[in-house]
Image (cartoon, rainbow, N blue to C red; front, side, top):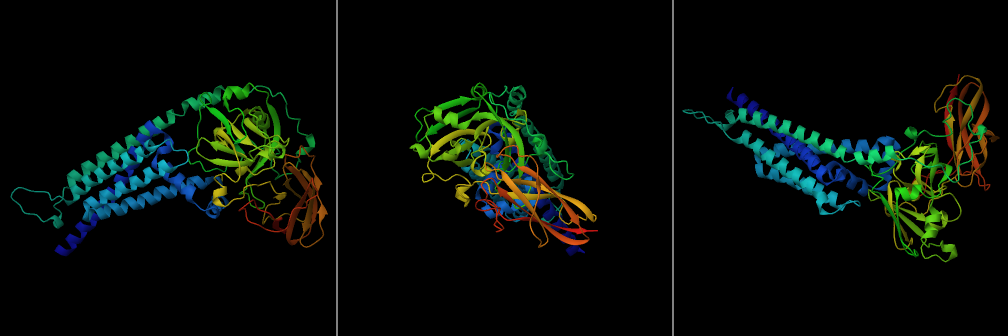
Length: 530
């Protein structure tokens, strides 16, 4: 009977020790959140460690995450970090029951890891970014030491002798301390989140107060025939809230347009430029229909969208700074665009200055850029994948060379130059669909930005290629819809599509992965006709 009692007591204390570790970890995170409000939200441990994890993740793993989790990849990462921290905290709590100081030291060590991650981030403002993690870790370590003390200190009853293993630990003291710690941590976290939320109020107000002037060079109206009336086809213009988002920002930067500045400098720049948001709005603006595509888009994938963009022609700004393209003797052949979160993208100078509508965009589909798409200003260059051209939250443009500097993605084995490949996609019928026999409308989109689409062909099973009917082309920088009336017969069938761009190049059948310069291959869907 005594043995059973001791085992149950030990089990209870072990469980409470694990709970102590969890409470200590919770306190560390919430106190760090509170301190980050005085530093900056990006310095909080989950964001800092998550950002560092993204920076050190191999390209293939990132590609896997985007492919399998889509735009939820950051949420999955954050949840993974929280779960890992929780398991770590539980283990530390159990460890501390036997080695009290060692357990507390482990909490401090993890705080050092968080601080190092924050300081090493590309957007770090200095050693102060490590402060939230360190202060949070100290709070967590002290709390763990106190709680474990309540589990290991025998409760003394006057006139009685009671062994520690027989339950003589301070239950009441532990419950009071644990409850108080949980309540205080919750309050600290709530206050921290509130203060961090308030820090972005100026940015929100600046966007709400932004008014886009009429463009000096408006876009031509989209032809009426550009949008086919086929159920299952996406709209020609992608709504802002449906436009794909692929980036590495765990916390979407909210930048106050009133304090935002852009600097243009570097090799071949005769006169550095520093521009405000209002400076850009006061310049002649261009408005253009441009389709963007992510290099992580697999064959038939969803990471492509079309919008009407308004902004300042980037080549005009570069010429004003005295920049010349390499073909005219310019010293720089690469633009390094830097975001407020430290992201760097490398773009060929020649492509920006060859006459295409490369711009610093301030508006998207008739409104100021949404925060998730780069407010106040982003860069985009038609015909290039986003990772070399579409810097969101841009704040710095440096002229340099490809020999002198590798941008973020190039350091991770992606190609330096990445023109968008000729691609096509079947949107309807869906894979494994079950259309009825008879005329089935097969339809989708094709794209080859800055070259345009000349032809789209469909093949049923191993039959001959048949020309699809093309919607009207808007511009060479936009995608193009197509359709094909298929006389469907009962049974299983494979539908395959390929496109030919405006240069006469036929979309290749060769399948390649997204790394290093975009996927290629024909898109196919398998259907069963009833």
